[in-house]
Length: 486
Image (cartoon, rainbow, N blue to C red; front, side, top):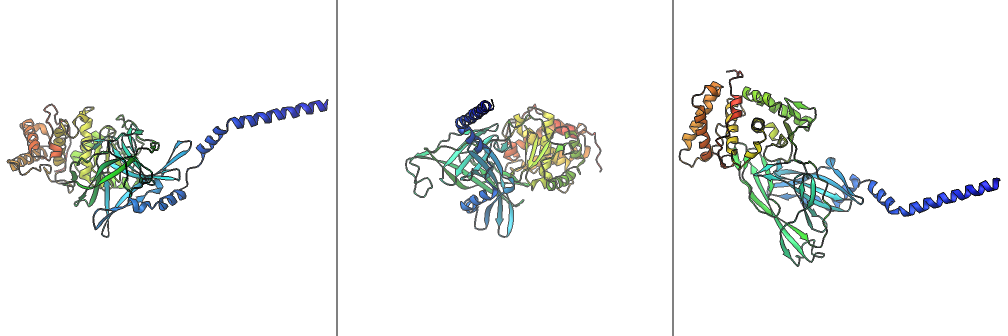
């Protein structure tokens, strides 16, 4: 009996062992894929070694002139890892540009794009440039890899891949270029690529002497469109073409998978920020140092009792403030209710107040506010009202801009008369603090608006006046309902 039991136990063990071997054999591919998927990404030391071996520092740094150099600082502490598929891991290394002029360090702003290095596993490196989607110079979605275009330059073989991002989803971007059958021997593609396309995108730069900053900007992929001038303190600065960026697409190469996108649909208008707010403004994304700088700026803005009155009304808008070190012009993004400034502009009360007033206008006008973006009908109404609010509200403050600073076309007949009439209007609002007490205010406002259309700076004044778009924000602030010290 014991022999029989031993026989059946032994047979059962052999059957189970055989089934296990069969299962493992049938699932060999699954096991390997699972191992690859959960393997660790390259270590920081490995990536830094690849960075050094490819001599990336010298390959991406450049000079503007004999005395000004741009150096890229790899931000290893902000390295992001993406698991693309079972065999591909991306490591995204942000690059921070720093300007050096003589012995001084100057701030560098990338106005409409970001640069980074993308490592594929620990084998290939790409130089990435992500251009934000914008209309008339206004970035709609500040999230990285959300809505815009991306180019990846393979630093080993010289091939470039282009992608379009819509709501965080990346796909191949068809581009037009000059097709050639042979490649110059100096190119990295020369030994492997029999047929290629050349795509040219222009790179622009300007230096703001008032703020000591240098700005860079890229035209849309495959174009050389000159950008509009940029605001530089109380003046304007014009762009000059630095160099055309020549990129090559080898027809036979396969494009790498696009990096995983971020952001979303640009925001629903709801502010989902954290609990770190100040005066109703979400500042949760700021560092402790940035919060201290912003607090000083906000305190200066609140020195104006009119702007303090406005901020009290604005506290329910769900406004958010972001400090982006590589941001160019300060901007209010209407669809996310976000003010974006760089680390220098967050200290400038005039810049921050400018965008706060736009947020207040958005709150009062409502969902049609974006219909009056730069270049669209009514944009002049928005900008003129904003200028008038700021000129009146900041009267006598140390950081106030010159009254009527955006009246710039002094070569036109009647310029001085128009500016004097505008200054008279500003002084009457300052004196009364209540627009309803000013005789013929609506007529005088209309005349000043029309004068601004003729004599104002083109970026602000060259759009169609809408008679139906009234200065509701101006009238809500200067309604006589608050007291200011004389």
